[in-house]
Image 1 (cartoon, helix red, strand yellow):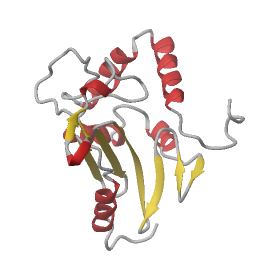
Image 2 (spheres, one colour; image 1 turned 30 degrees about the horizontal axis):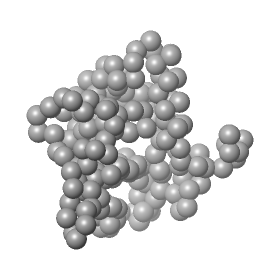
Image 3 (cartoon, rainbow, N blue to C red; image 1 turned 90 degrees about the horizontal axis):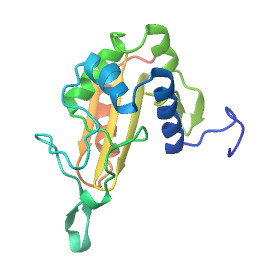
Image 4 (cartoon, rainbow, N blue to C red; image 1 turned 90 degrees about the vertical axis):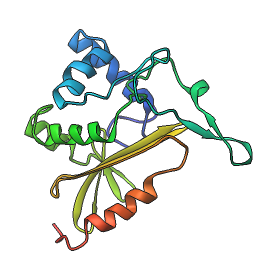
Length: 195
């Protein structure tokens, strides 16, 4: 370990791999079965899954990495055979909005568990990191978010629990979507009262 648990924050993909192994051990399902049966299906996320590289799901966007002289190259050679608990799931914007809805309607976790998930545990810059999400306030409005990416893909997902908004930005190239998310934060929180 780099430091005793709870002493510092350091984002770790390996931590999510370990979490996936714990889910498999406790549930008796593979991680992929668990996600399908306990998250995607109950949330109504009909276009989300961990697709193996040799499958051909309909309407799947391809990712593109920045290449020489402003070109873009397909990211197919940078992808794993299938995603993992650390990332690599495929989803649509609509499905991510359904995920947010399922969370706040307590279809995936109880109200008590959701409150714990969305409570900051460890400072990370101006935000707090909770259990798998950043929690911060902008114009007095609480935001719960996470973002990420890989070669040729980027994403940003923000939930505004008190306002009921969901922001999903999915990109199939290397640009960071946080500038778009920041502008949307300004628009969505105009005129909100500090909490």
